[in-house]
Amino acid sequence: MKKIFLFVTVTFLSLALNSCSKSSSNDDNGGGGGANTITCKIGGASKTFTATTSSSGGFVFIYGYTGSQAAPTETLSLYMLSGATGANKINSITYMNAAGADFDTDPITSNVTTNSATAAAGTFSGTLISSSGSGADLTLTDGSFSATF
Image 1: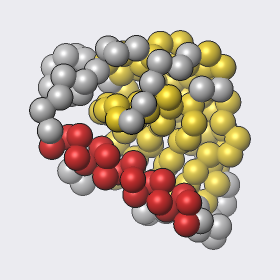
Image 2 (image 1 turned 180 degrees about the vertical axis):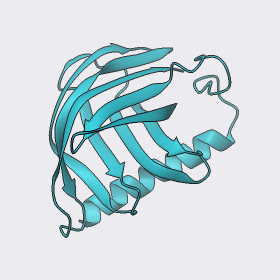
Image 3 (image 1 turned 45 degrees about the vertical axis):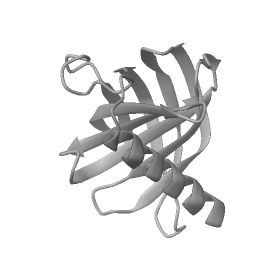
């Protein structure tokens, strides 16, 4: 549990620091033309997340949110090695539902088709497991992401 908490904390700090700096790798205001999205079914319910991207320390982070970025209703984040393509290249997926409960994936099935300095795309599925162990597992199906940097 401490490892998960540390990983999530470091990841969000990296995203926060990267979003405060001048960067050509994150073009949320027009470059993607609305194409920066993550879509999936969680527990059978269709979800669409607006996605922002960053890369740091050899990893690509794709952060998806519903509602506003400043006060998201739900979040879904994907983490993978920069440049890695092919089967099962997504290292981790985290989800926070509208009630604020956190979930991690285990196992993840993925296919990353694009992972370059300018774009990332692919598909994913898996099981979302409550991080606190108190919630019911959720199925994660029909997942896809497409983001430009």
